[in-house]
Image (tube, rainbow, N blue to C red):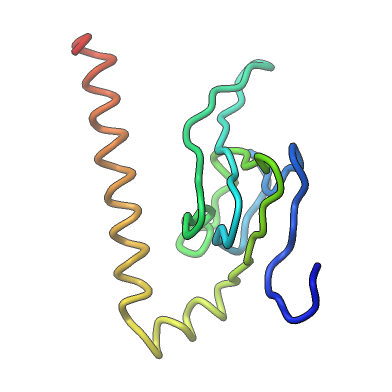
Length: 123
């Protein structure tokens, strides 16, 4: 990691979080890209590619469920980790942080709903 910079650098193919692991923090992509993968019966399905400003793992700040997907570096990627305490402190200083995350989660739910409609109705 370069001096004075936050976050951790992951190399191409490195796992950042693994599906099924217990999570207690969220992540922000500072630079580069990471892919979100769902694994089932030894097969992988790429759900999304996150670039700069992308967030993942935010559900771990709300519930105590296991990670719903694996996130892996695509090329070199710098990731900032935000734990619950830091997140709550940021929210108390600037409530727009929480609003921004809720917006991103809402966008994801809409995308998933649209995909479900396409699968069910063939549209």
